[in-house]
Structures are given as structure tokens and as C-alpha cells.
Length: 74
Image (cartoon, rainbow, N blue to C red; front, top):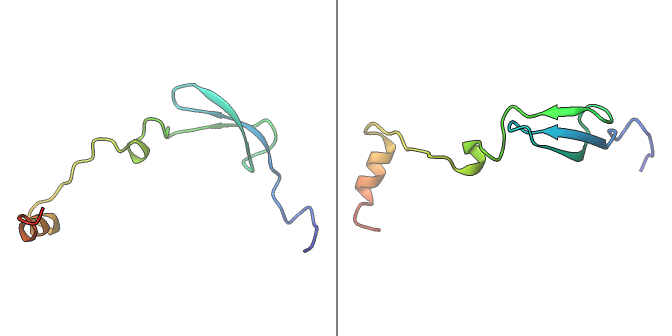
């Protein structure tokens, strides 16, 4: 395997700032040594990671047909 410095990205420490203001240090290929990554979406509070209060919106479409088809099964 070729050992060339240009092949691999620079892996260094950065500071990550969450949306609530909390901070932590991690290693990343983002930016350069000592840079700060400020998150726009916080994985501690965003519904994509927490599950949120997802509601199924259906107006007589696939969900309604599925429920009607399998209503007595479960």
C-alpha cells in the first residue's frame, strides 16, 4: 500500500458546540486543529434521533387501506 501523506485526511482534535451551549472535544477530519463545529441540529433534542411526537398523516390513502385490510389480525 502506498504511504503518501496526500492520500489520508488530517485527523485532529476539534471542539463541538451543541445547540444548548454544551461543548465537548472529539477527533475529526473537519476543518483544522482547534476548529469549532457548531451544530444547527442537536441530536439530544431533534425528533429524528429522539423519536419525537411523530403523527401519521393519512387522508384515505395507503395507511387507511392497510388498517382496513388487517384490522382484525392484531
